[in-house]
Image 1 (cartoon, rainbow, N blue to C red):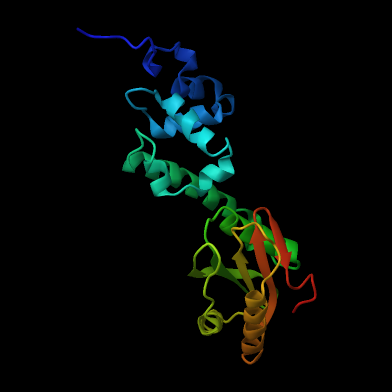
Image 2: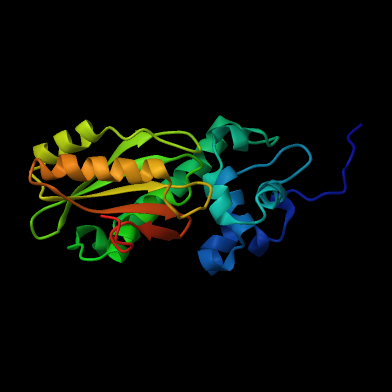
Length: 232
């Protein structure tokens, strides 16, 4: 004999309350974060519909989209009903959003301040749970001609190979470079290792007629500039 749980599936909801139908009829802005996430995961599990599962996932990260964006594959797989495909769908959506942000005209602009440089590297680094080191390559007019991830580390440190940076800078025929890395801890201040690496890179770059314009440390949506603080 079939038993009922007393719950309604999404298919049994009023049509204008179903996430997909609501999206089509009223637009994406009419949906809650949970409803948008439910569209990505498509279905729930035996005890939860997609929206309920989405609410639980969001609840686990304090209903913060920034925290959700930092969740990894294994984090999503901990939720019953989230398999490989669903986990990758969520992560792919956030990656597309990040790449869309990186298409901003600023990425083709001439960089004349730490703020402009920070606005480029913050989207790359702010939501990571590990440290990464990036380099911005600029021509004589300080126009951005390339950006590159140099290394990836753990939660507390990443290795910076000065030789690789200089080699790549010469290959791109750039005149200026900007070093950038993040502090997942949220601390903006540089450590002694950060200062030592900056000095080493500055000296090596000068020997090749390349100027290290700045070293940006990203901490969330904030940043620390070596140039602004007179440390270059």
